[in-house]
Amino acid sequence: MSISKAFEVAFNRMADKGWDKIYVMVDIHDTILRACYEQDETFDYLPLAREALRRLTRRDDICLILWTACDRTKLDFYMRRFEHDGIHFEYANCNPEVQNTHISCFDDKFYFNVGIDDKFGFDGDTDWAEVLAALDAHPASRQ
Image (cartoon, rainbow, N blue to C red; front, side):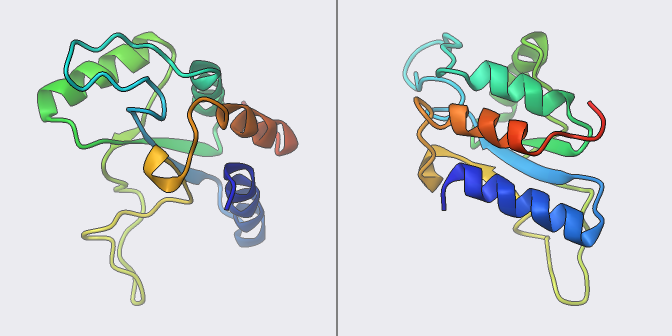
């Protein structure tokens, strides 16, 4: 499924179910930033990533969740730096807003509507433009 289709499905489900927001999970390396695993982080944003993430941040109907395997010290560094760059992640590697139900257990796998990760087939060099187009196609009632 393309990222634009994933957003369309999520926004339509939100409308059908009367939800007030969707949850978007985003990886860091080769998704937001060019990977630099063996050196200091350069914060080399992939094309349109910063702009798209800022727009996602400003929307009341989207909750951004950072999805990363980095250690706690690095995680704090990333969260502060993204915040400095105008990008706010509500949570990292969890979603405490959605609790277990009689048919769903989120103890080991947290709930999200859209996953943005190179491991999911997202191409950080080109797909952020699709994210921006999806946001344009589904404007928020409040921003």
